[in-house]
Each structure stands twice: as structure tokens, then as C-alpha cells.
Amino acid sequence: MLKSVRSVVQLRKFELSKTTRLLNACGDLDDLRAIAKKRLPGGVFDYFDGAAEDEVTKVENSRAFANVELRPRILRDVSKIDTSTTIMGQPVPFPIALSPTGFTRIAHPQGELAVARVAGRFGLPFTLSTLGTRSIEEVAAVATGPLWYQLYVWKDRGLSRELVQRAKAAGYKSIMLTVDTPVFGRRERDVRRGFTLPPKIGLETFIDGIRHPKWTWDFVRNEPITFSAVAGRSDVDGSRAITLADYVNSQFDPTLSWKDLAWIREESGLPIMLKGIQSVEDALVAAEMGVNAIALSNHGGRQYDGSPAPIALLPEVMQSVGDRIEVLVDGGVRRGSDVVKACALGARGVMFGRPYLYGLGAAGEPGVQWALDHITQGVTRTMALIGETSIANMSDGVVKRVRQ
Image (cartoon, rainbow, N blue to C red; front, side):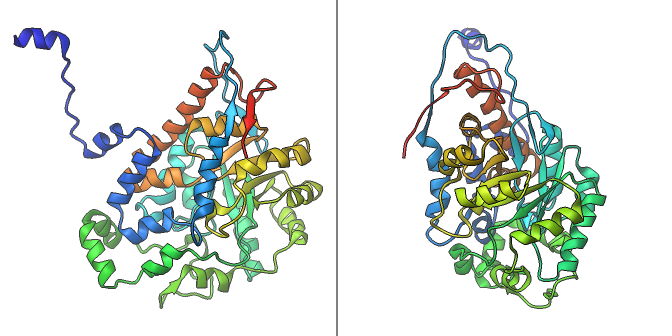
């Protein structure tokens, strides 16, 4: 009897690593998100997962991809799929770049270093935030793929110039100017949690820490989490707790305007992308100003609740400026099919942040690897299923319709 059972049932080898077991059981990014939610204190998870006000825009960013239908073609040779393209003049194996995220080490001690290493293994651009928790030089030392530097312009313009110069000296290939943060959005999960810099340890926080001992131990035994690039250079010295909204509103320059592009371009000598374009009108101005690329983005819904989903805005933008400037979609990407849909509508590629943050919070570097595996494998699979062999040169008519 036992022999007959063995002949039809193959026993699975038990995986000793709990992290590996959890990742092997993941089917999609929702599963990865659930692990991160369980492993991180509530306030930490809400910082990454939350968005502005009612969070309608955050939800719509992802939901809007379902409105794009592709037209599969059959009986085509799809034995060789080319997913490569160029973004900002740099060849990439997939039309994907990793968006900048701030305060990243609060998810895992390795923070941006883990993400940059994984991006390098894939050959994908990684963007370091001005509010990153590892320095410009530290990230450059571990990165093997293209590096971009995301710039917030400070009231202290001398500090902004210094950051650009450091990025250029460290080998970063492009400057990404974020243009949707003249003031900080109202992120109500953070308000309810009392999220501050540095974190305040109240009774609720203390109890949450006890419930998440590994995260708490990592937080206590590692160096303090700071915005590495600007540590000791801003007016906020860390001696008192301050909300992120108060920090941003006291440091970022709300007078930033189109005329400032000239000095940023002159200072860096690097290609420039504007991240945070939310209208056709501004896309037209960016093209007229000679910007190299734009990212249609509403900051993951974290600034203003009510802006259009980037994928929904894409067709109109492509019709207006698609032949003059590279256009990327930032926001709502959760699957490889989302990447293909964006490219089918004319985008040069996509960017995302939350997917890799879920991976980082769930399992550190292996979790980031899982997230990128999930999305890149989905790109190749979707291309084969719709009968397309080159993501940079998809057939006319591959998009069946875009529902409103």
C-alpha cells in the first residue's frame, strides 16, 4: 500500500527557512503585502501602504489598469520574447524603473541597499530619494545597475545644488525632479498613528513593538534612521519629534517653478525627468522646455486625493506629446500585464515603489527579489499570451479598448 502511494505521490521537501516558505506560498503582491502587514508594526506598515485623505486615488491607480483590454493574436511564433527597451537613453532588459521611496530603512535595516542590489541583478534603474535613509555614496557602492537621483528642491538652494553634484560625482545617470510636492499631502493614517520623525514611543507604539519583536530588535540595535543625504544640513536637528508634514513644509521650496529647470540642468549636466505630471497641459510645457522624460504620477495617491490615474491619463498625453518626449507611468502597477498595457498605450515604461516595499517589509532582500520576479515574469508571459514578441515594437491594434 505504502509503495503504491509513493508511486503516485511525491513528498515535498520541507523548507527550513520560514521566509522562503512564506515567499513560496505567495501567489501575487496581495499575498506579499499581507506578510509585510503582519511583520511590521501598524504605524510602519501604514506609512508605506497609506495615501492621502480617503485613499480613493490610490485604489483607482491600480483599478484603472482593468479598464485596458488587449487583443490577443494566436498562432504566432512566441518562442523568443524581447522585453528590452531604452529609458532615458539607457538600455534596460524590461521597461521598468524603481521609483524613489523615503524613510525606507524603517521597513528593513538594509533599506535602499537591498533594493539597489536586487535592481542591479535585474539590470533595472533604481532611483534614490532625497529622503533616502542611505547616502548617495553608499547606494552607489553596492549598485550594479543604472542609478537615478530623485531631487526635492529645498529652500536652501545651496543644499539642492550640493545633492545634485554629489549624485553626478557618484555616477548617477539621471536627475528625477519631483514636482507634485509644493506642500505635504494629508495622510490620515499617519495622523491617526501619530507618525513622527524620529518615531515617538508612546503606549500604543510600545505595545505594537512588543507584538513585533524582530522588527523592534532590528530598530533598536541598528544605527538611527535619518535622511542620510541631508542629515545635519536641515533646520530640523532631530532633537524633537516632528511630523513628516511639518518637516516637508518647513524645508521644501514652494516657489519651485518651470524657470528652475535651467539651473538644475546646468548644475547636473544630466538627463532630467519630471515626476508628478498630472495633466496634458503640463506634459506639453515639459516637452517645450526640453525635458528628457516625464512620469505621469500622483505620488501613489499620497498627495492629493482626486487626481487622475496615470494609466487613464496616458492615451491623451501620448496623443499630445508622445512623439516629442519619453512618457512613463508611475502608480498602480501590480502585475506584469500592467507593464504591457502601459507600453501598448505608448509609454516608454513604468515605475513602481509599493511592490518592492511590500517585499522589503515582508522578507528583506529576498522579498524584493520576489516582487521583481513576479512582475518581470508576468511581462514575458503576457507578451507570449497576446502574441507579441517585442515590447518596444508592439503591433498596431494590440489595445482592444480603454473603458472609461
